[in-house]
Amino acid sequence: MPTSAPYAIPIIASVARQVRPRSVLEIGVGFGKYGVLLREYMDIWEMNTLADYDRRHWRTRIEGIEATREYITPLHDFIYDKIHLGEATRIIDTLDRYDLILMADVLEHFDKPTGASFVRKLYDHAERCVLLTYPEPCEPRGNVLDNPYEAHHSAWNRHDFKPFPRVAYKRVEGKAAVVAIVRPPHPLPLLTPCFGARRREGWKGRVAGGMVRVLGPVNASRLATWLRGRPRTLRT
Ligand SMILES: C[S@@+](CC[C@H](N)C(=O)[O-])C[C@H]1O[C@@H](n2cnc3c(N)ncnc32)[C@H](O)[C@@H]1O
Image (cartoon, rainbow, N blue to C red):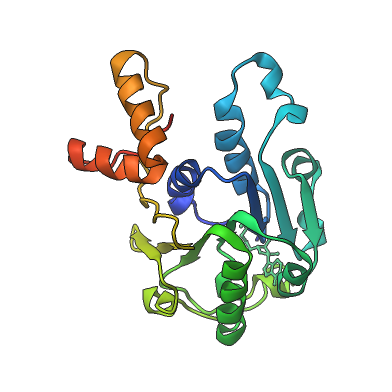
C-alpha cells in the first residue's frame, strides 16, 4: 500500500526541524504524506508573509523516487519539486547529493544485501543525514494488490547500522524503528516526537534563538532537554 503506520510521524517532523535541510530526497513516497509533512514544517512553518504560502516562494527542494506509477497524483505534483519514477536502486545513481534523505517503510521491501548496499549508497548521497523508518518486528509478506514493490523481503534491527560512524536509533511503541545516520561532523538529532512548537516571544524567545544560533538546532535542543529534564527541541 502507498502508506505506512503513523508511529514515526512526529519524530520525522522533529528531526527535519533539527536538520533544517535545504534539499530532501524521499525514497518510496507512496501517497505522499511525508512530502506534505516536510513541506509544511520546512516552508509553511517559516512563513513571514501571506505571500510565502505561494509555492513559488518555497525554499526547500523536495524530490522523491517512486516505483509505482499509479500512486502518483496531483498532490505529488504540487508538493514535491520532482518525482523520479522507477526503481530507486537504479535512479539513485543518476542523482546528486541531498542534505536529508528520508526512506520511510521501504527498507523491508529489499532483500538484505540489496537493502544494506542501498543504505550505504544513500549515505554517500547525503550531505547530512539519512533518516529511516521500518517495521520492527517485520513479518514476511507477499505482494499486496499484485504489487511486487509491496512485498516484505527483509527484517532489520539496530545492529545492521553499526558500520556507520554516527547513528541514532529508537524503537517506537514496540512496532517500528527510526534510525538517523548522520555524516560527521554533523551532530546526531534527538529522536524525540516533541519539538518547540511555538515561536517564543520575549526573553525566552531571545534565549532560545540565541542558543540555536550559537550551538545549532541539535546541540541547542540537547541543552534545552537537559535543562528542562524532558525532551525539548528548539526552533529559532
Ligand atoms: C509501505 S509504502 C511507504 C510509503 C511512504 N513512504 C509512507 O511511509 O507513507 C512503500 C513505498 O515504497 C515504494 N517502493 C518499494 N520498493 C521500491 C523501490 N525499489 N524503488 C522505488 N520505490 C519503491 C512502493 O511502491 C511504496 O510506494
